[in-house]
Amino acid sequence: MIIDVHGHFTTAPSQLDAYRGRQLSALNRPSRGRLLITDDELRTSLIPVIQQLDDRGIASLIFSPRASGMGHEIGSFATSRYWSEHNNDLIYRATQMYPGRLIPAGQLPQSPGVTPASCIDELERIVTQLGFVGVNVNPDVSGGAAPFTPPISDPWWTPLWEKVVELDVPVMLHASSTVNPALHLNGSHYTNSDSAVAFDLGWSDLLERLPELKIVVPHGGGSIPFNFNRIRALHIAAGKRPLEEALRQFYFDTAVYDRDSMEMLIRKIGADNLLFASEPFGTAKPQDPATGKAFDDTVSFVNDVDWLQPAEKEKILSGNARRLYGRAAFGNID
Image 1 (cartoon, rainbow, N blue to C red):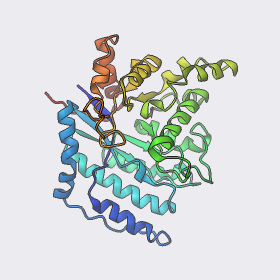
Image 2: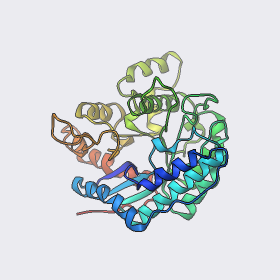
Image 3: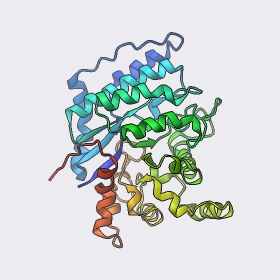
């Protein structure tokens, strides 16, 4: 069984972007407005997603709104709230069409300078009323501008972290847009954010204060595996606990797109703390001319590692996800 923990609704019907365009044209007068997408239109937009899951033997995909589209840096809290509600409602409808195959995870109405406690109402709604099993949290709410977002270990975040612990939903720390013109969204901003939050999780005492907090760092943790000994040296110099011990308190997904990187990620992090992810229809959807396969077709990158034991492969491909996402009812395929 294979569970992919990292999927976004990048094939959503065009009405979603049209709604956002209307919203952005009236930022001084935010209103919820209407998003009109028929069931047939929604189902058609999901056909390529389900087909790809079938083709690659993936039983379930944790499915959330488009990360770059969360757009928390734009507008007021009300703007973000209405946008998040519509996106989450659309994810709910999509996952109801394919129960067990598409597993719902949501976005939150984060807004620059606004306490994360303001997101709790939407978090409770999607978990307790809509059955969502996880949530994406943007660790850089303003997209790199003032007001700067405190580090995820800062007490500013504590009300939100306590609520996700209470609800028992894992958090994927996934960045959204950036306003920094020096950074490419997919090429540098995302992976910079991944590196920063993984470092902070290991460096701080957040997960000692909240040991039940379930956190996933996407995209293989950014530069963490490559700079492993650099960070080990910092831990030793500062008298911190060993990096290897610190990293066992949270999870990395495997959304990396070459075999060498995957094997290094597995060696550095270990099978117990990895979750299979390919982020289908995302950054790595083009075909690799060297192999003739899509870059994001990565199941074999795990299965073909000859030094991994079968039990370790099972943990990465599904076992860890089943344990972490306790609210999920994952599907199965023959």
